[in-house]
Length: 386
Ligand SMILES: CC(=O)SCCNC(=O)CCNC(=O)[C@H](O)C(C)(C)COP(=O)(O)OP(=O)(O)OC[C@H]1O[C@@H](n2cnc3c(N)ncnc32)[C@H](O)[C@@H]1OP(=O)(O)O
Ligand SMILES: O=C(O)CCC(=O)C(=O)O
Image 1 (cartoon, helix red, strand yellow):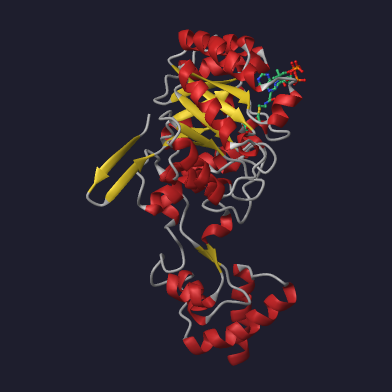
Image 2 (spheres, helix red, strand yellow):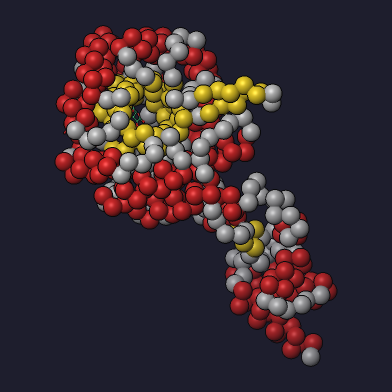
């Protein structure tokens, strides 16, 4: 499922990326994807190169099962996994959808067991019963622990060993309420890794704004797989964002993933449109202001080298060129470049004069100026000097 390659440069990890936009992403309150949107998102995810798609939850409805079946019929070059509770009925419904894999989710904290009026021993019984059936019905069976990060390490070790003994092929730790930190993920990885060779997956939530950092840390802490969603769409504050993790992996050097980052903008735009959740201006990687600059010092440097004040080129994530806005924080280089792009040559001295007016307008309006406002300032300045 994932591999580590020894090279002279060190250990190169091949992380296994599971996208859950179509399952946990659609659980974001109020979000519903149409069957057409689901198929389009699945197609784009496959083009982006994720390894696995958690394609939905069959027990929800006949309509959900129908669309999962249609996605399975698309024969995408990616593993499709159906989600199920620790319930034979859910597993049988999942098996009617034609996916290669199933993920079976168990309560993994005292609180979640109590909510279901179950004792820990119930988990082992269910693992044995459910997995013997699931292994007949699916090529790949994953087991998950909900609320695992509020559980004890000893409990998780017992659960993981039981899952391995029952024939699970991967063990998911879900940070269901998003309380993990990179430090706790590091410790958890070390503790579980020494307990069993079963491949580990980390499923992060973003309640503390650490989902992507936790997913990335998990891949450095002995977890072979992570689940993510496009734009981080998911329950409450969402999940780890696929596009953020993809760029972190691409930039960190220690990983070799199959992800084609140049498709990320198209994918994020499609999910934003289908979910009705616009991409936030400041969203890392694909937000508009991720490649927008106003500060004079930055713009002067960017005009010489686009990587001077950006971690990567917009084209690396499928966005157009970076954008410069002119306002209070601009310098002469940006003003000269603004006019150059319009075929007008402006001297450094003239740019300084224009900047005085630009700054006072920007202060008064409390924003950057539009192109036509900047042009009007120059026209008035030219008349003054005529
Ligand atoms: C953290 C997560 O993301 S978990 C996934 C959450 N996703 C969803 O809930 C989305 C889809 N959900 C649904 O369509 C419905 O809730 C259904 C079809 C799953 C269940 O509907 P209902 O039968 O009406 O049950 P309801 O939603 O009221 O309660 C949940 C039931 O699941 C049970 N349950 C919860 N987690 C698990 C689990 N991991 N394994 C087995 N059973 C579970 C609860 O004990 C409860 O059972 P009960 O009805 O016997 O009390
Ligand atoms: O699959 C699981 O076990 C976890 C489900 C989930 O989305 C979560 O707990 O956050």
